[in-house]
Length: 453
Image (cartoon, rainbow, N blue to C red; front, side):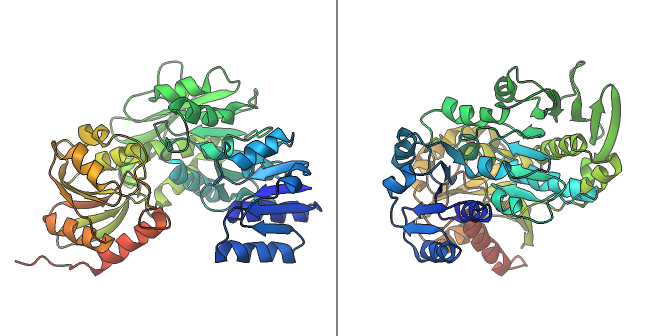
């Protein structure tokens, strides 16, 4: 019997995959919302034993394997009990990958994973491949494993939560975008967070290709001496003499240099992505696509046709001379720092939500000469005000999100950017960062289009 912990999307998909393979399935969730109850009912109708409101330790101990959803920490009591009972525990990513014959490209890192994953899938599709994007990007890998016919290739966004419970997972191509502090509310230390990321390399061999950030010392340390080819990407410097990979040249061209031959792909002015960090994402995706068998012309076409992702430095347009930008996905300090550096206008910054443990003073260098004002809101408002108030103008708003945005719009002047890049989780006001971003977009759409004298 296969056990599955969690009745969210990945758990449901893993349960359906196990049922399709003829397994008996026990799936459970500690929650008991209407949505979870509905998922449980659907799985019962498909033949599973499904429970909400708690986990049956006896049933889990009788399983031959337990698949854990990424929303459940590997240190949770239920996971500990399963392991104490001698039952192997794997992530949904690991379980699904066992039943996918197509070559896999796995993208991890702290920031830029989703954009790089989506762009890499887009490049492979531009090359004529059936190459879905899955994993942390929204489509569970188990859903892809159920597809008939099977795809030509799969691009999977791999979070630290998923990589923390792999066993034989072995992507053909692995990408590490960057590393920075994150999820310190779930991990006891930065080292433990990075250690889960490092499981990407557990099953490396001579056929592996690693696409790595050559300007990030932590990424260089993470890969260590793992076997396989290394392709480095850089945006602020050129490649070292002994490196293969990609860089941005003095004219703004994205250039790949493989085995001594340099080849320009596209100019950054042709990309529909904002900021130098997205130039890094583009290089990473291009190198990975080439390693997966895409041709150069297709990669160039794909780079210039990719429109970016919702809630990630999403330009919403100008209202009364103010450029509204939705970067609701900037849920940590590192992502907000990247967003600040990508915007070339004076900024009114919306900063707040549920605190994730990082110091907001780490934003000060990126704020210098860029941020006109900060609007602090949500559970973290007082801490944001205390941390940043001595250094930049901070207006604290304790009301609704609508009042927060209204205050920010009142502070912005023509020629400014009004940037939602909160550096915090959304859970104090919203279900997730997507709901937060959608609300911001709706408010932007209602903002006056003309300045009033």
